[in-house]
Length: 221
Image 1 (tube, rainbow, N blue to C red):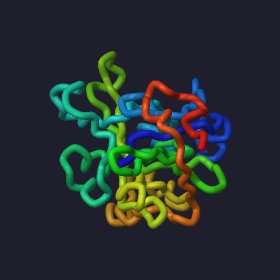
Image 2 (image 1 turned 180 degrees about the horizontal axis):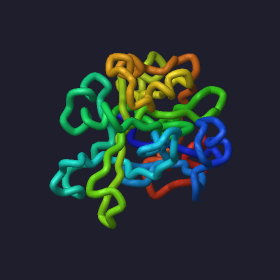
Image 3 (image 1 turned 90 degrees about the vertical axis):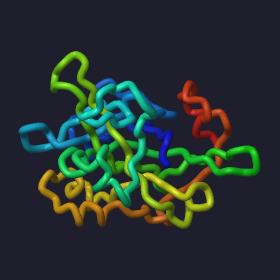
């Protein structure tokens, strides 16, 4: 699964890298947790180009009776995302890039769990394959725009830590993922493990275990 991640990259650098307007009010985040607002990029509604959006992490289907009930759907499995009722409509029409520059995973060691910080070896930000939904009428005071992160099987670097990892999209595939007309089979072919040679997994302290901790100590080796 993917249950925590970081986004420390400055807004201007993100805008340049992902061809989007600079995200407003973007402070460095070292421990983004479920139900919090996450930075995302999606196609502009009714227009061409990309737009930045703040989305609540934990997808709420448009057909849900109670948006606050149940466990937050923070992840969707790549193998079944196209057919699960909660995700299939968003997979067809509402895909997004969730911006990050690292994520955390916990390795079981007896009765304890060792957290690891996993990121690109060169430190660049990247985009996670995401889906978004809107619960309620657009612009309504009670409307909720939410998202989920798609996961796939782990690569050889991360498999000893956890058997799943988030789908990190390659730069060449970002346009396909956001294209509302993209073929479903091509989309599914993008949901694969990222190259292990390009990633680094560093052990960090249990300080990151608490979502209330959100500072540079979270990523300290």
